[in-house]
Length: 448
Image (cartoon, one colour):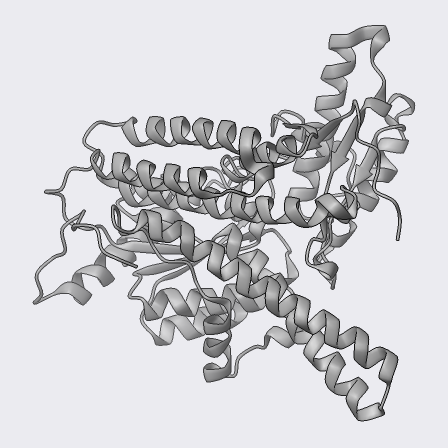
């Protein structure tokens, strides 16, 4: 196993994939002594596009532009004292056919084209080992950090879901955003100060307090809006700059939006690793491969315990929030797989994020969402598969569906497309609720 890089005295550069998740992940890194920062995003997009062929998916161009622009600005700021060796660029990867698995390789090639940036190291975590943090930390710290990082993702999801649940109904425009920004700052400070102890109770308590504060900002006389669920490629659906502020646009057009969570992806990766370990165990047992059997058994146990802990940790955070605000519950990955088994349309065994997106869209439909949007980079293979399967399936269920591909270009028909979609969503909601009493915007809190 390759030894983790020495980050002493260096700055770890984090891509700004999500306004909440990236900042909490940086706080988790800082809790373990890493000087991590979130890079400004979209400022170097033209440079990212200039140095790629156009065949790459859009997040590759965005993140490449971000790191080049950041390093160039640091060189300008520091002058002769600038050293690329003082920076480490964080870029995860994924196994399988997705082009995301090659981002860090391409970024390395491009950075090497600039003599002044060649000494900037790239550190990565992979889905193949469930984002084992030993690529960054020594073994004694890797496990605890992963637990804190996973908690950071849960808290980011919860902050986002609090915002999405309350912002469409706020009495004073901007009040919910201000509440979430303040909560994000409080959580970041608390995580950096005490996160390494793995005492999560102060962070969980802050999540509950934020839900309570945000719920008081809602106009309770407003009727519940039609709900729109978002699935798709994790970067595009999470990065407001890349998806052209899709969530806020849908809210402005009369919807209440729920995006697939960051935690869902982590649970999905753990679930796939658990499946693969079980399959390897059965194969070794059949072949009487005793060394392989022992390895597979250990992997199977570790992945099972990891999933159990992740689900328990997630429930603990949501239990603090749900008494104050009925945010959307997160999808259980095993339950999502049942949707695929029932419809026989796809299988988690095939891999890629297509499975989780297809199942997530079907789960939205089962939960009476009034529309589904699939957000993805232009030419994305997994999301194209999703589109081919979901369009006829959701049409059959009378659920409006919209593909939302992005490549950084301005789409002249985007406004009319979204307005048409939201008209269909509103019509479906009206028909669904016809004859029934319309739900109030903010019912009293309920238990999990």
